[in-house]
Amino acid sequence: MKKFIILIPVYNDWKSLSKLLENIDTQVEKWDSEISVLIVNDASTEERSDLDSNYKKIKSVKILNMKENRVHQRCIAAGLKYICKNEDFDRVIVMDADGEDRPEELNDFFNKAKENSNKTITGNRFKRSESLFFKIMYEVHKLLTLIFTGKLIKFGNFTCLPKIHAEQLIQKPQLWNSYSGSVMQIIGDRTPIPSRRGTRYVLPSKMNFIALVFHSLSIISVFRNAVIIRSIVYLLVYLFLISSNISLFNFMPIFFLFIFVLIILKISMRANMKEFDQSLDNIGSIDILKSPNSRQ
Image (tube, rainbow, N blue to C red):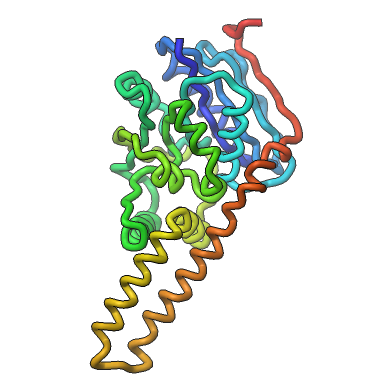
């Protein structure tokens, strides 16, 4: 029997998480596999609401309570490291707690995983439910990523990793910066399922404009070397094009390109392997909720 662990980072959004777990339990009820859930509590400031432990299929829910807030992407990285170091598993499914990663699509992941036992399954977005502004910014993010990395990233956190790929990821410092960027760069053996972004259960999105920009730049920073090489090529081509008409105005794009590359280099330095290796030291306590189907 295959063992699946569903990894969910959460910060304060306990009501959404409670609903998500109920929906997950319903969706995986007919799976011929063992299902467990690992929640990484990113030092939430709000008291945790009671989570149901009377699940039909979910074997157990384990909550890692972090001492200090390390933000969403680093919670995923720490959770993956914890799973690889401490759990017996065959696959890890990473999803958000807010409902935007639809539990109804877990069956698609499961069926695809049975057909592709050693491949990472990615939930590639084909429809989004956010505001027009967010949709436009997301398209700009994809375009920038394509221009400076040569990669078109269509997926976010909603993925299903075989054990071998999870173990590969935790060996790389890039994971400490961006999960989806690291999957794109490190894991070549991938196959997609179509994924529609769901509606949030309770709280509004915490992703403001600044957070979205930083998230985008963090993904691009994973491909630092490609950014440098492409920027040099773009610079040489641009200098050739303006060589007959040099002016202060024409040098403005060069200035902005230089600033952009500096920002990417600065963000890439946050991919600190030492910090990542010590991420499990940030666990303050571990709570375990067992279902009636758990073996005692």
